[in-house]
Structures are given as structure tokens and as C-alpha cells.
Figure 1 (spheres, rainbow, N blue to C red):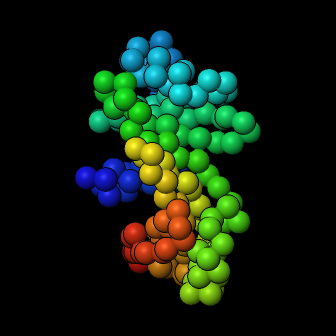
Figure 2 (figure 1 turned 120 degrees about the vertical axis):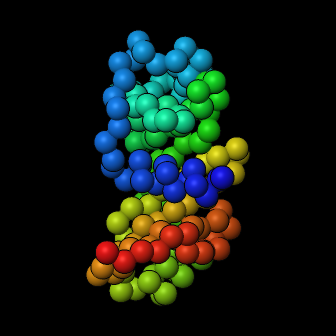
Length: 146
């Protein structure tokens, strides 16, 4: 289930269109939990999916996406990061083993107190998403060719 949810959020985070919500139509519990978790958030936009509500916003000059269940519980949040923010051993391994690939996006993914990183790569028609643990271990999360 976690892998399915992460894959769905990766697709959403990378730039799909969602159904924009007026802030007045956001579930009260979602809105209340969001305000408690992310005090000071600016430029908040809301979108609704089948199983969750997404808030995209800026906090401390960083772009963040937070995902909430229908009952208002926070499922996870992501933020775009620079490659240099990954664990050093992961940076070295990515530069060595994926030297011919272009890094298209890096995100930090936080769910239930567990933090992982996802790095999107492209090498010609081949696209990959690497999962990087907090300790720098790397695994191929998803791989596809156009």
C-alpha cells in the first residue's frame, strides 16, 4: 500500500493537473490539521483526489506538498530538494553509477515519521526513480522506457 501511495504522489508531485478547491470547500478537519502542522504556510492551493486532499504551499521559502486523508489525518508530506541535500554516500553512488543520466527531480518524502528521498533520472528514453534511505542506501523504485 505504501508503495502504491508513494507512486501516486510522485505522479501528482511531478505536475499533474488536479481538481482545484476553493479553500472554503476544504474539509474542516483537513484544514484544521493543516493549520496546526504548517503554521506560517503561504500561497496555499488545495486539490482533491479520490482518496486524499493535497495542499501545495510555501513554508520557509520551500515548496511543500502535504497529503491528508478524508478524516483529516496527515498521510505524508514532500518537499523538493537539491541533490546536495541527500546523504553524502548516496550522492557519490548516484554520480558514479548513474553518470550518464540527468537528474530531473529530487524530493524528500516524510510519512509516519519515516523519511526517504526519491530521485528521478532520465537517460535517453529510460526513466528511473531511485529510492534513497536516510542512511544513503539506494534502490531502484521504478524504471520505465518511453
